[in-house]
Length: 194
Image 1: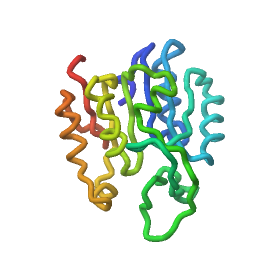
Image 2: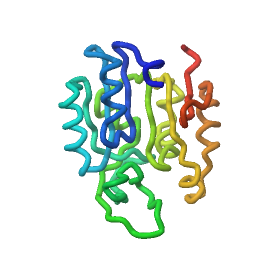
Image 3: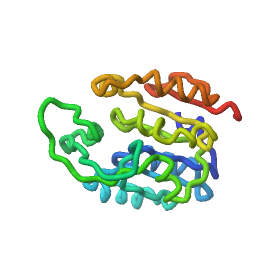
Image 4: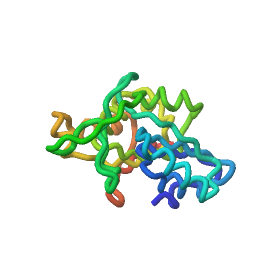
């Protein structure tokens, strides 16, 4: 899917980078003239991501170790077992208690500004139920269409557990002029400028 969207020289944001798989793939696709920003708050994955980037000569990737929310601050981040670090998140997804890590929170807009990213060609969002805050916490970013294409993995059950509606995300992006289609488990929102 990324290969159909990313071209040399483009900017890609991997929000919820986990171990860096999508970041490495995007790095190759955008090439040395392109840029990738990997956003992953788990400190235990920092060295894993950096190692993956080194092994793949992904020199055009920078790492932001923050969590994205609707306000800047700090929070406890729930850590799933190492065997499934991708299910970690700001909200607890299990009935049992997981260890936590204190993380720095930024809005998506603040994170992009801090990392000097002025526009994004493609953004992948997989943040375990905080896609709501990621999008709706930075409305001006999407109203101005500084993000051309957004690939979102929606975690409807996690949103419902917090009394939120996934439909609000779609409704907002559609109101900004984005067109939506489902592809490979992601909702793909595309700005009409393409």
